[in-house]
Length: 177
Image (cartoon, rainbow, N blue to C red; front, top):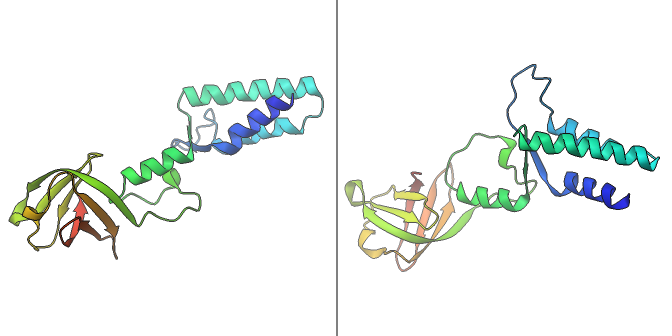
């Protein structure tokens, strides 16, 4: 019985649960809080058989909601990876990728996969993860930056970013995609 209680509690505690947006009045779709509340309520049942039946029922309902994509289970490592991948993209202020108290990513070190010359001779560079950035100022840097070099992307004031290239100067940049 203890393993079941610990396992169910572990599911609730060790994962970050997110619900997809629900239209108003969607009573048939469980909210994350309600699903976890029902699962956690099973722990209060003192009689072993009743507690086991409660856990079986609620874990089954939880599993069905996850499979039907009414509730998403995302662990902290996935959130960190996704936040890193989205660095430089303006997103709405939603709790979807809430860092749960972790500090905001202020800089990111990456390797340049490819470069090309953009408008006005500015550099456009693609990182190994597929993110595409472009220079926004006019400092001539295109011929100094090569694939394989490291770049440190730093968050500036007012949603601005800087690209600090290895063996080259720092320029203003923005993420294209």
